[in-house]
Image (tube, rainbow, N blue to C red; front, side, top):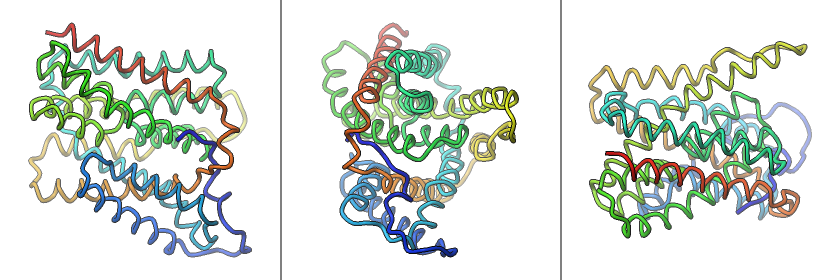
Length: 341
């Protein structure tokens, strides 16, 4: 699924000027998100985010997207995306993360830190552009498409770079989701160790749930908590990237980026709420559904920027970097799970 991406704007029919309503594009994005969620309930192994992304790709490559839809699609791939990341924080109780223990927590930190740094180094050696390799490194090491989107907002990445990184996450995350369970079943690991290996290796939360569920409830429980622990690290990683960007911009003319993006503050605040308050199940379920809706709508919008006819222009370097990053993350997670007590 590797391809060169264009911004959603490049996939529309130019119909002339004027300010257009955002509602048609928002309605389309929401409708696709609903369909993706319905398909996920029929086939739980398929992430609604991935389904929505694929629908966007297919739609953009079968017919030009009318310009009247473009304003709403732009809102979907930016504002709705950030709102979805904020609501993701309500799924993360810091008490559950603390209960992992120091050994498992160390594995999680190692996966994220080594994954990002090693991927950046390999990407530099391969000649992959800086923004692309940063998005790939964070997406593969933290939490897939949501991490790509979050980091892209911090560095103001081009839509084509975002779409490329998301496409690679989908490709390698799907492969990992199917390949890891049979491999883990052949190793002499406990259920907890298998869960740590799966939760530390697979890119998307939904993919972790699907893979963990296939290996049993104990593996699923451990894998889910480990994966959510990786998601928690999204906030400090974005903060570090933002501070680095501010130092670089300080040497140049022009406005400096905000010290901390507002959606990161919202993400942290939502996590604190989930930790300190005993939220009713109806509230957490509704928040999870809203988060899935928002992120699915955003993935559809990003998918509309992927163009088949330009895929050859990308070259093999990002594809090789995705393979290397996956191998790095899997290797660190497996080593940590194998030697933890």
